[in-house]
Length: 343
Ligand SMILES: Nc1ncnc2c1ncn2[C@@H]1O[C@H](COP(=O)(O)OP(=O)(O)OP(=O)(O)O)[C@@H](O)[C@H]1O
Image (cartoon, rainbow, N blue to C red; front, top):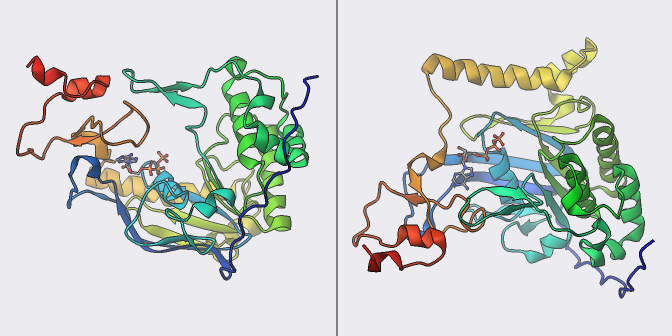
């Protein structure tokens, strides 16, 4: 047994004013990735999200579904305060990008955690530090010992595990434990259950249901895996491949869901998603339209911090700068300007 360090009791979390019935409010949101760092605001940048509205009542559990590239992660990151948007996006009545108070009440978990970007390689590798789980975010763990123990038990974690010796699923369980310790009011889950085994996944879903029923936490969960989700969600949002809302509302009001329920369909959510997404796919095939990755005409841009150093920074090569830009390769290598001396 390791000796527990003594920490002062946690400070109370900053309070949030009454914000009405909705924990999340997105109105007429249009968003395109811009590469402003290199003065390239591109008026023709493709809108990833277009005129999007989303209202989620406090305490709801909403599934976010959509095809690859439809903008689910983008929407999640906006709600998590990672991207500045022209239209105000409200979480708990506060500006999702600007109000730092939200960091104490909003939890955001995605697949990037535990991955670290490697300069020169431009790819992410799992965090391989030789550190035991009980030493990670120690103060937070000790601020909520009961909640930590409950999560440890539910996720089957050994606090003496060392991060450099874990499998993908075990690493994901540690991420969940650390991400869920602080009692959140809003939880944004971006497809993070992929590597969990079936039992842990089911237990996690049950635990999340309790969090929203008992503590009135609001949960938005983007996923492609519908196992065990047939009766989990209270709300559903379908994002179509134009970044627009295809359907949004309470599960009660979704006729096709109610029909499937009446007929005791064994995989209702899968059937609904398949129905919507297949329609899009067939239409795209008919028009020979393929998903376009926005990065197609971009080169690496050292001024774009999205994704960390040397990992996918973009420079629009279709725009000719007035003075030719030098040292691009050296920028990538971390010694800006050195190359032009040799050119
Ligand atoms: N950092 C970025 N810079 C530029 N374009 C991006 C960036 N991240 C995503 N995109 C583009 O935005 C669009 C939506 O991507 P996003 O990751 O939000 O989709 P998604 O619905 O989460 O997809 P998936 O189901 O595959 O995870 C895609 O066309 C993608 O190429």
